[in-house]
Structure formats: structure tokens, C-alpha cells
Amino acid sequence: MNRKTIKKKLFRGEKVIPAVLGLSLLPSLAHAHCPLCTAGAGILAVVAASIGVPVLVVSTLLGGAALSMGIWLGKVLKKKFIPYQRHVITWLVYFSTVIPLWPILKDYKTLYAPFLGFDKYANKIPVDLYAVGVIIGAIILLVTPYLSKKLSVVAGKQIIPFQGIVITLLLLIIVPLLINWIFLI
Image 1 (spheres, one colour):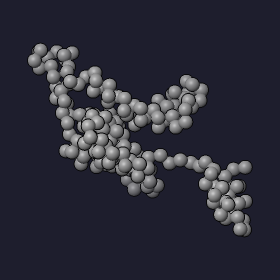
Image 2 (cartoon, one colour):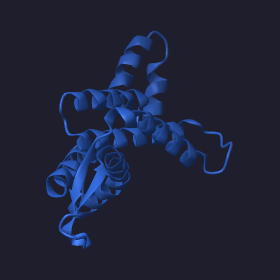
Image 3 (tube, helix red, strand yellow):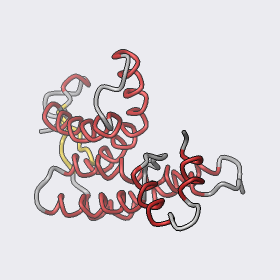
Image 4 (tube, one colour):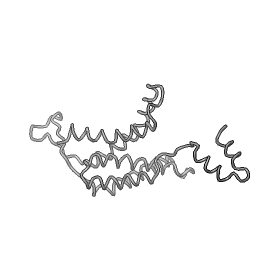
């Protein structure tokens, strides 16, 4: 028995309240990338940076949150007004979230890069951690669904519940910490 059949049978007569309660217990299609969650993540990013969480980690999370909000808003409009509308909306939302926060979260560190061939005194390159972080966050958010699918194919099933979300959050936290630890002084 599918969801529509259950819904039709339960909504007959005085069974409206039990029907609503019963239907709330049935699983339905989940819509990811809600704006409330991503806006909350952006606020938490600013607070986290102010209490000492590394800016690279905060900006990576913010880049992922901004892109997820852009993806969600790109899917909201069903009618197509311009070519590549979803992509345009996605990137407009991304940049309109990321750029205003740049002055607040801007932080520079030096990248120790002796492998680039500079002399021994010029082997440090200044890097804006915020810009690097938001780009890394967007890349992680775009790549993670493919990683999750590959992992499910290799394992033959989904390994853990909410596997895509878990992989995304882990990568958004671990990757900038590794970059900070390995490359930046």
C-alpha cells in the first residue's frame, strides 16, 4: 500500500486527526539545503571565528553553507526565465553570501612553499585563508555526493544513515585542518 492509498483511506469521515498524525509518521521525500539551516550555519561561522576557531575551518564551512543555500534557492523557481537559471541563481546566492562576510573574516597566513623554487628568503607566500576556505568548502560540497555514491557502490549499500551529510561535514572540518597543519605556518 503506497502513501496515496493510505492518505485516501484515512481522510474519509471523522478520521482526519488520526490521518494527520499517521501521515506525519510515514517517511516522505526529504528536501536538503534548507535556507534556515544554511543561514544558521553562516551565523555560527561568524561566532566561531570570533571565539577562536581557525578561520580556514570557519570559511570552509561557510563556503559549503553558502553553496548549499544557492543550490536550494536555484531549485525553488520551477519556471525557467533565463538560460542556465539554476546555475546563475546558485552562484549569485553563493557570492552574495561569501563576499559581504569577507571583510569580517579576512585572515592572512603565509604558505611555506620551498618547492616553488624561490630563494631561501622568498619561499613564503601570503594567502587569504577566507578566500581559500570558501573555495574549498564549495568544492567539497560539489564533490561529496559523488564520493558518497561511490562508497555505497563499493560497499554494496549505504554504510550509515545520512551517509552523505556525515561525509560532507567530516570533509568540511578535516580538510581545512589538514591544510592548516601541513602547509601553513
